[in-house]
Image (cartoon, rainbow, N blue to C red):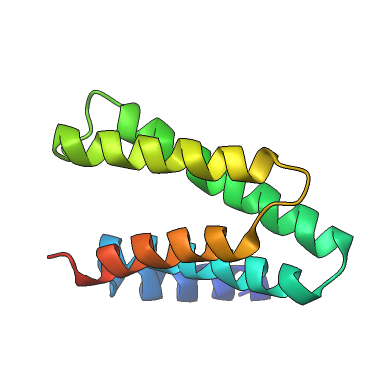
Length: 115
């Protein structure tokens, strides 16, 4: 079995043992890791972290707008509103990484604590 197949199988097994919410929280943790690296890193670290965070939030907003989404409408509206604020910040010439990290931490904490 190739190394790729072994890694793929290990990832699948670890994903199956964690809840979907835990996996979603982990995505925000990973985005924050990149944003924290960008705080002291170089320009490439910053561009990559902001691009990944933008992709994350565009996905969140798209899912929140999906009519099939079963979250309550006020929660979906709040996610879209937060996503717009995050995107505005990422569009600025010097995004406030501490703000972006804080927002991601709050969402991750909500995912981690929600039942």
